[in-house]
Length: 144
Image 1 (cartoon, rainbow, N blue to C red):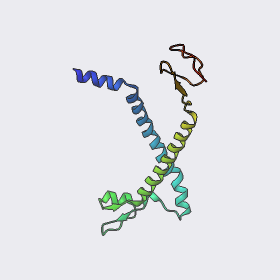
Image 2: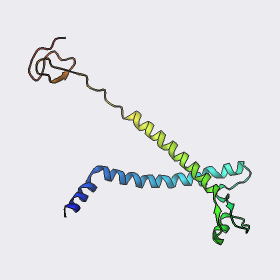
Image 3: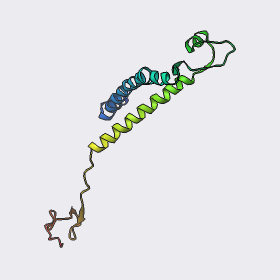
Image 4: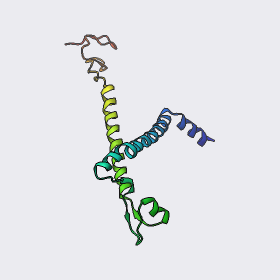
């Protein structure tokens, strides 16, 4: 039973719950970005490049000709799907950029407090603020 208690304590910690929430939100965000890439960004790029559908670009490794990737997959033909790889690269680049911007903004919002500058009391050697003129621990006068 100590193992179950340890596991319960581990799960009850805030870090594990925060991590779980982050993974769930990240997965949902990934779906949104994939939709953005596949449904919004890639069609205009394909149109500019001469009506190219990146998700349908593939290299057929069999001797039979297939008009589309879905036809080749349905036939079980071996293919190298470089168009899907291009989509995944663009997808990753967008996610990485958005995360970079997000972390940059969070860092700006969470300013780190300036470290307290202290000095040691010459009599009791306790750490006291550097502007103090009397030690709060031993009440000794502190020379300037």
